[in-house]
Amino acid sequence: MASQPDIVAELYRRSLPRLGAYAFLLTGSHAEAEELVQAAIVKVCARPRRLTNLPQTEAYVRAAIRTIHLDGLRRQSRWHRAAPTLAQPDAVAGPADHVAEADVVGVAMRSLAPRVRTVVAMYYWEDLSVAEIAGAMGISDGTVKGYLQDGRRALAPLLGEDDGRERSAVMEVRS
Image (cartoon, rainbow, N blue to C red):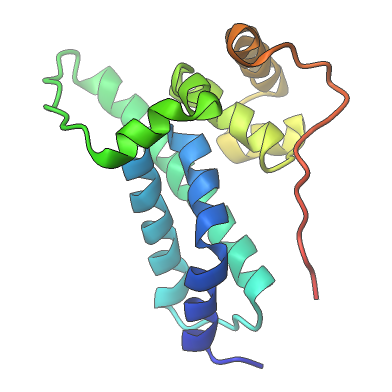
């Protein structure tokens, strides 16, 4: 059994690209994805837990990424209802934004509304069922299906039609 610092180091060395890609699909922004991954790793690793291997730790961090993102969506939704007029922050484009523009899937995912993007990422990337997504987001199955339909409709001109035969090949190594 490896110690927690060894597992965290291995997590950064081996799993960071996958975790970053998943967070990017949820957020649509490299900067937000990086912050989301860091927050999830800190949340998971700050308290002593029985993290015994890399796949278990990666799965735990992936679940934390999803939870933190969904909490942020809820908080943002409440804030937008409470504050009708918001000042938009000045955004400065960084080098990661230029790379993101070259990514067809990234550009297409950024075109979606945040909740639709989250449902599409959870369905295709994390391979969750409609019921699992509904439970995680606290919405009905019909709402999830509607968001998936909206996402498919918006992404079809950019990425092609979804024939429904193939979903993401998510492989988890369990020990």
